[in-house]
Length: 373
Image: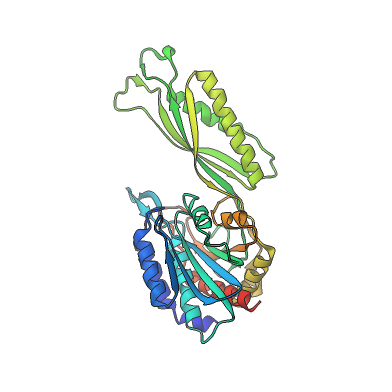
């Protein structure tokens, strides 16, 4: 198995470099979609694209079981060396390269066990909406097993180790709008300062308490108020909130308390606060059977001593919407050690590219074990 994957090392690395050098934002992955489609067709896959969104599906084999691999496609928008730009700092470029590597490895085999293998290249994971769109489009309706993959930061796992599951928490992004009236700088008593409202909200968010046995957090991640005239007290502002909770139940409680704090502020200052959820990701719902298969694949490739226990993280991924919306799915996500530093979403994130071969080989082995099963 290792020799077979290593035969494709050059193309896997070249594919990764292409994706890394051509990042595209959520729902804008048009060139990425075209590139993957072309590669899948060259490899002899049946291919499906979508008229109303980016993303592409490849497929080989026929019959049951239907085993699917999912790779996310979108990049982040962030400041890199003083310039805001699209940037692959979450590993999606690596995920796509590994899944395409699995296609190459499987197609190079003389024969495959009976069954269908589907390769899902999904847009807009960072928005938390791509998986839901693909669920609506019926992409996983007939899928029996679904596997994902995500690079892990070095603080969690070094190169040469991997985990059969990532137990993500739930996540929400809320955008807020404070609506009031501007005031003269000399007359602050005539109304509410939107900046003071925002500062009070930060302190009130810090006073939210849930069950301490369940990890959770809520924090303000942006705030915009005021203009070029510094003698005007701004009455209006916009802001964003990032919410995290390790369970879906805790997230429901957290959202309720955030809305309650906003209601208190409205009455206290006599202004309007509007909160809108712009992205949501559910906590993990993973299959023990799928985890067992992935653990066996990791042990076959890296050795049983390098198969780590399932990772619990407050990070989120919309991968879990597939099994939540389609409970028949047996799903899990491979956590791949790769010496990733300084951390996920850091603008200068790097990792050891040797991990691309480890991940490709583990995923290939997991597919074959599932088909043989």
